[in-house]
Length: 344
Image 1 (tube, rainbow, N blue to C red):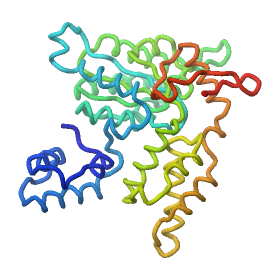
Image 2 (cartoon, one colour):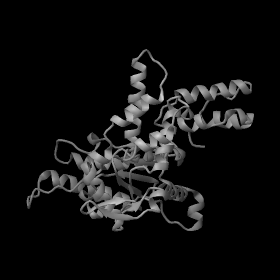
Image 3 (cartoon, rainbow, N blue to C red):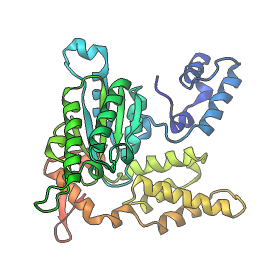
Image 4 (cartoon, helix red, strand yellow):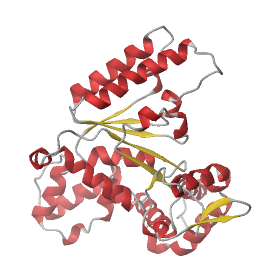
């Protein structure tokens, strides 16, 4: 059983659960199973208050049902039943591109948890060194280490900054050679290794990555801004995680104000509202705090307007699969404002 997330624990109706069900939850949290029913509930509630937000599950990812369905199917391929059925190798990975702040990192962490795998996040100093042959050595050490820990999810955020193709005209520089050699090691590993290493790469500018590397991924998805229904779920979930009852606030009003917000924009606005209330002698958070914070925020859709339009056009051309749920899938791409591509 995967580790329950903070949001998942807070959403549980513990009072209606049997003792056996409560113990199953405690077992997944590696907590003692002793105590009467009230004590078991108190242990879970205490954990819910203290568990970090970095533990995610599928249910924490709002508005990306097509992507989650793909992950659920792909995760089954790591089971013994998949080999019996006839699959000859494990999937190699997925590339996620899209609007900044819309949950790409959260997805990677949720997959490792749901698939009950190890999780390794690649940091720049693991792949880039100052000396000749450092890059190749670092990449070889990375893939060998991953194979030794398999099954494992390897997460590389903003991969184009580490593996992107950046030529200086016709010059082939030493740094280009080192990067290409390191990428060759990675390409060979993704093609030949079958130990159970699954790569999740994110890239806001995926065109900088080589076609050979893009071809290694079993899935390529674009994550758009959250739809209206997804924003409603995100706002409610974030308030619950911060120990606030969503029913105390006009969520629909906040959904309307947050049009064009990313998930990160919503989180920042809620935290700004709480900071204001906390600064005033830690008074209760009221709806006007949230409305003011949401109204003053500058959404990602305004900051990255042209970039988002280009990425949406990429989806319309069939170069990426859309990760967002039915509300956006049912819409159509239209040309607005002199050629800008938008959803309706």
